[in-house]
Image (cartoon, rainbow, N blue to C red; front, side, top):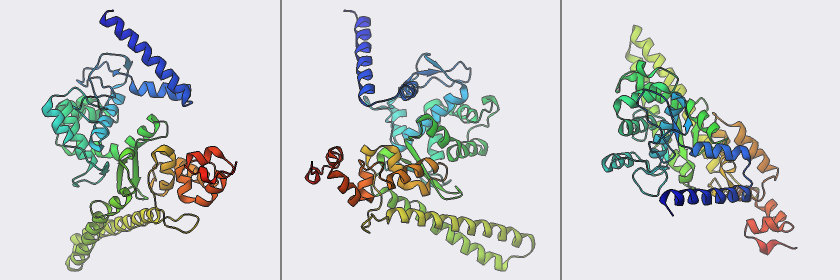
Length: 367
């Protein structure tokens, strides 16, 4: 048998396995199409220098045509995936291994934030925009990286500012703070891989890669490395401005007063965000016991997100809907339901064997 024949045979076997898995897990035709579209090998007819990109981060020949703007989004999403640790460039057998030289792969791996949390805060060591921009430069080169950023909002690549100017960095920052999450939620059919936690007016936020989340992640966010440090810095800045306002005069005084007002507004928003996070980590169950929040990967993305709806202003409606359904007992098979309503779920385990099995509580089953 030739290599080509073996390849065809292998592809056929893989397709049959995929078909069986889709049927086993009840994946709809629409969801299957979305999954296969995401994993397809896209290409673009363009003179921009932006090569085609697969889920593995490889340059490939044409299969699925994309607009230049959509391809730019894919490159940015791949760079985000590297930064949060989802993709592992240069590592054989790993998702997103790419086709990079050893030196480039090493530099890309150096961009990874190991706990999966990146902040939207210019100047911070874990600032997402800064790390993503550097990732694009390493993968594509400086000129093509600028073209990718310029294409994100449909701007002509030739009109994009050069690397290092405020225009490119500001555009990228605006995109990851606003448009990227909306696109990501749509791409993943309302089950996002990256979660955008933000203050109420979205002046401060962080992205979290859900597979890296632990029961300690929200405490990490509240600590001095992220939100706690931002609050302390903003409070100190406010105190400095108050002192300066007292001694300033004329136009300079008015300028400082405006800055002070903005700083105090931001501080109030940050403190409100801190209280919202604390409410989640201090959450109690129906017995009054503090249970906080912890990810339960077997429950799926949306049920894990549901208790966090108060810190998801960009997309609160869907998680809130599932939180309400959890509260009414619709998902009592889940570990999340057992966390917050243990007595109610235990009662159901007495008569529902599938629930008892799901919670490893066959000792409760009376059937």
